[in-house]
Image 1: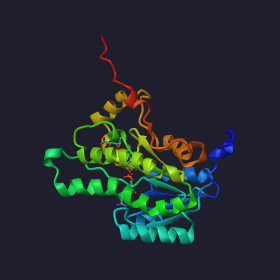
Image 2 (image 1 turned 120 degrees about the horizontal axis):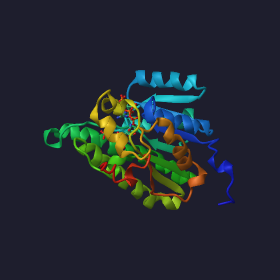
Image 3 (image 1 turned 60 degrees about the vertical axis):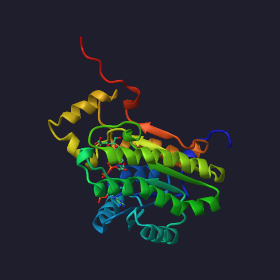
Amino acid sequence: MAEFNIDQFNLEGKVALVTGASYGIGFAIASSLAEAGAKIAFNDIKQELVDEGLEKYKSKDIEAYGFVADVTKENEVSELIKKIEKQVGVVDILVNNAGIIKREKMHEMNADDWRQVIDIDLTGPFIMAKAVIPSMIEQRSGKIINICSMMSELGRETVSAYAAAKGGLKMLTKNIASEYGKYNIQCNGIGPGYIETPQTAPLREEGHPFNDFIISKTPAERWGKTDDLKGPAVFLASEASDFVNGHILYVDGGILAYIGKQPSS
Ligand code: NAP
Ligand code: GCO
């Protein structure tokens, strides 16, 4: 690698595919990659969400290409990649963002709900990654960013399937890095802390005890904003991180470093 130059963060000429990026974390990350120069493609499971997303990108002057595709369906993903290659170009950067959570006590959760979470949050990133890796091998370059979680490291009541999937996603990240690093493909994760999005809306309702709990567990003493994830995403998508591989970058305001507030004496 040449001497450091700020242009290493520039993504001009790159095509970035962000899954489930009509709103929330995916939308913020895709916007940051576009601000750094990349062309954006995204998918979602419903046409109305894709349309909503397209409007939002347009209002920010971002040229984005939106497609309907379910990340758990191999045939839909392979069609998606063909369409993107034709209309936008070969995918240089994949961000596996699409994900769901189900908050249920484990002993009351049925196996179908468990399977759905594992399917979308873990098998989806596997299907997406395997669809773009062949062209990344051919190009001898590629970036895959998996959106992990605090639950890649920690457990909590009611999120067993999500924690199992996000813990698995951390290990899939390390395995992709191990298997494809020789082709100059880097696969890293971003582990967001507790971020204000529709996914966490039920936990942030006025008076919800979880709200105070999260603020007290976070040294930054606030919920994260989707904007907090933009810089880390650009870094991991860019040449500036070419020797960073298999790493999970936790963007959590310090949660994982902290034992929690000490009792006042
Ligand atoms: P979100 O607001 O629920 O957005 C997730 C997106 O993925 C939605 O557009 C969703 O569509 C889409 N999606 C769901 N299933 C899909 C499928 N099978 N195929 C394609 N798209 C699908 O979530 P978020 O809070 O922005 O979270 C984005 C990612 O960050 C997730 O992986 C989440 O686990 C992770 N994360 C979130 C937080 C947080 O605090 N918010 C923290 C750590 C990690 P629908 O609206 O139709 O479901
Ligand atoms: C929950 C939350 C989390 C966050 C996030 C933490 O119910 O505990 O929804 O799972 O969304 O993934 O990093």
